[in-house]
Image (cartoon, rainbow, N blue to C red; front, top):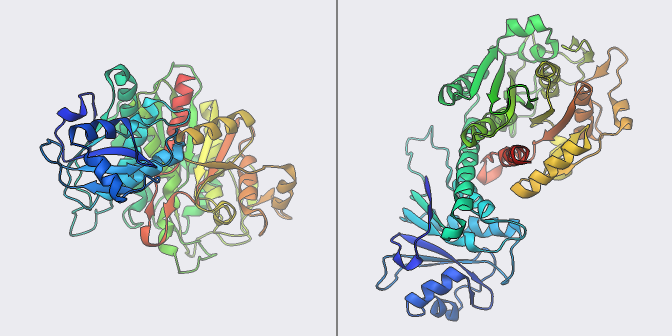
Length: 495
């Protein structure tokens, strides 16, 4: 989809549809008022009929506009005539694009960036329009014979006064970059496990490196990892015919000697649970166990497009977790890269085995901070549902920065405690620690496990098991937490 900023007066525009906002009690936004004046009170007539009350998220499409170069007008309810919350602004945007998706409309002008949103400027509002619209029209059609999508929209123009043109253009550039990062993340996650293997994921990283000179890509093969002593990571791939890969993306946008931000994403391209086999219902969704790795690729793509003045390292440990004669068995003891030994009590708790060696490997980059993201525990879905991702970490400043970024990006986080008492649950009679801590506090004990490999730097863990994809009728990847991480990086770049 093509996005642009439009500064010309509304009455001079030519488009298939103009989106304007209306408030409750028949009150008009500035753009709605201007169009109402040039169309002999058309919008007021529609409101007087009661077809739309102005509640947030309501829409009415006016299909015929007499004597106008604007062919249709979409009225979008904004609620009470007062500044909107960020969430309600996005709710109105989503309602707008959803109501246009199954029409023949190709060119759209959106005036909703004029709305007052609490503590948000033109840049943020413009960016949200791009992100929300782009997310809503995404459809996975790669393996469908009919590749036609619901939406025919090809161009979105976002209005802005000339006085705020620079702010709007910055928001547009950020929105495009983040939207493209989200699209890549969703596409990779939605691919089936027989296509998106660890080797395929590595190939996608190499393609990114070809496209963006600021990205340097390197791949560790199993022989390389064996030399490094990555016994935990390699134990996961033993049950698979697909070789494991450790993918490194090195983005150098900052000063040569400045410490990098390290992003680690779990890249398990399919998780059958290993010997501790998962139940069949819903197992198809275990292709989404690589959403953390896809998020790293999407976020690095966004950073490269925005040319952020930061140094960022992306690490993606990628494997499959399958049952096989050589697979991990409950009771096995592994030696990690750090030298710590791990008793495997459940082979379905494999993500932490991939991550723990990668956390140790991250030390060689002398990181400023390390953030890992993983579809790690079903317990996170039980605790928090599908609204926020779980956040745990060993540094309050880092966690607070992520919470602030989540608030701005509308990509929610909720922090859980990482207290010493929970570490007791990981004690093993036979090794330094067990890979699971029992049925209680599963999300926390998983993070406690990881924390033992992240003691030498500031670290945060995002459990995205409930937020990386949707299930049911709307099954598909969400692209989260690319918006959150992109906002965190933007804040770091301009902080």
